[in-house]
Image (cartoon, rainbow, N blue to C red; front, side, top):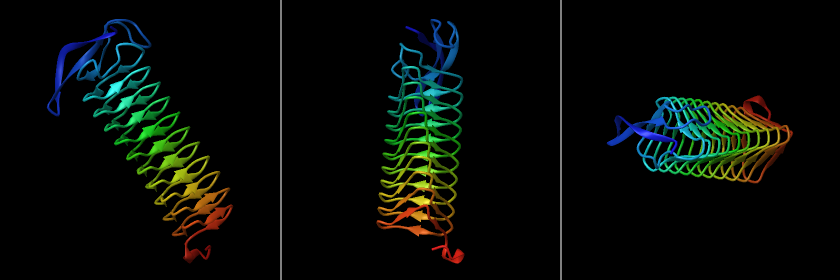
Amino acid sequence: MKYKLTEESIEVAGRKLYRIQALIDFADIVKGDLGGWIESDNNLSQTGDAWVYDDAWVYGTAQVYDAARVFENARVFGAALVFGAARVSGTARVFGAARVYDEAHVYDAAHVFENARVSGTAHVFENARVYGAARVSGAARVFGAALVFGAARVSGTARVFGAARVYDEAHVYDAAHVFENARVSGTAHVFENARVYGAARVSGAARVFGAALVFGAARVSGAADAEAAELKSPEGKGE
């Protein structure tokens, strides 16, 4: 055993959580170090380098294992899994049946929940929300007040931020950026070095790629392709 539950406890949503204490040296932990709070030893593996630090909570049937770490005031609960070398910190929440793994990091006030997956070296932070059956992977970044949900995917080195929404079965990948109040939905793909921003909407089976810019109140829908184009609102005479 690498840790024990101490007698120090707190009540959380009708559950009793116990502070943990290390019984051996491992990773950056020294025997005797106090950690965060868990409901039972089912929440934190007794093998590997996984640890719950500071005032973080892990409870319900949630599990933290491998070399994963939960820090600061983060909360992992429900049936969520955090594993590999993943990190959850700040006031982030990972819950439902969500999975955060590989070297992914969820932090600040971000939430990952329902059946969402965050993997690779992806970061979800600030006030972003990833939920439904959404996937954020590779070296992607989702931040600001962005929402990624439904069966949407964000991968590669893509960025989704501001108040942007990516949902349905849309896919944003490669080095594409979707930001401000833009929406990407349907089965649309935004990829390569494309930028979708302002109040732009990309929907249906549309493809926006190359060095394309879609902004203002522009709309790309149906099976349209926009490659290396500049599409903006009608007022800007760019459509």
